[in-house]
Image (cartoon, rainbow, N blue to C red; front, side):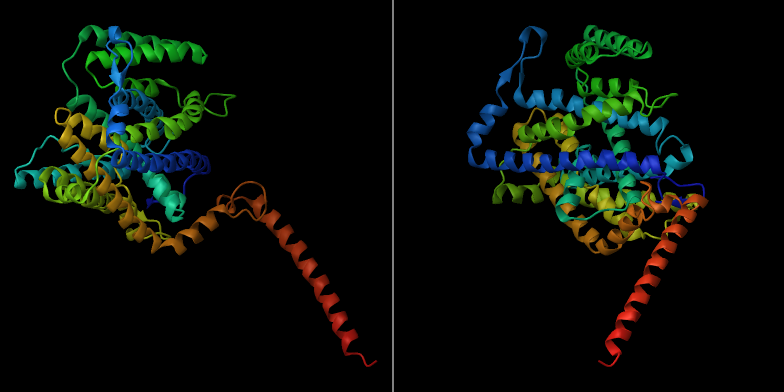
Length: 462
């Protein structure tokens, strides 16, 4: 969310931006509920039929000659999540050229908040493991925010955030995704195969040229995208980077005669596939860990897993809230008078839900140790659950205020399809409202006369 021209933080969104945020979050909310169900299904499956779950998860398939004989779990993590990161790339491009991040001054607050929201959990994890003589390899695990899971929590507890807070949460997640991508690309790249990397780069150049020439048709881009993805996987760079790169290449600004940019159009088509299929399937084959009393005890007693939990629950909340407060203080941005700093803290706590990307980074960070990988996954689940519960309590305390603000944002008394709050400076709106009130006044005067006549008839002697 941005600082507007009058230096208001979490001020009212423009009408197009509000509509975009509403549409994007509506799909993510449905996907988040599916993600939640997939995670629960994975836990039930792994803890009741553990051998069956592992057999399916570790089953290999794919063309070995192309270096793609992968387990189901790897297909989900490296293949399906490429779709998720493709959408993330489009979101990032749109934010940079047409959204809240296009103005450096407006972008300052959410970028600082997101950076602090990643640095603080990493610092908490590092501190816990330095003091406890644990592994520092998992420092990046608690740095991610899962927007879909966060929205699912909002849907479950029945709380509607005002559009400014929803946009702030979405922008945080977009910036968070950008830096998560950089972390994966820089710190989790194995030995490079330069031939495959060169092939992937050449494929991306062809992809870009086709877009520049205005070539259309999924039958052109989907096969090319699969080739780029396969080459990127074999290059040693994490395959999801291919999805991000292609997403960033799409044009996200409109031209004359266009209602929506190509990027927005493609995002509208692909986001349901990402939120409704790719991410839930990844959760199904990644979240299945053994949960027992002993396992939970280990989560809170071992430095690696304790660092993940504290990073998500404590580090995220303090980092995002602290970064936002300091940035607002030094930029002299005034908080929207309809909201309060506890609202920002509640959203910061909600951002501690770090499910999808945290699970992915956990798998990458401890790839050589299956037991520790499962423990880290359990820590991600528990940390995300604790953050969700704490955020739910904080948000419920302000639920009545949020409902009032949401009702004000939705009110359309003149029934022209535009919320009244966006028409206060339009003379035509006030003239329409004057006509509406005059008709209502005439109607009530007529009713008053009829009521008076009825009472007089009742009072007249028989």
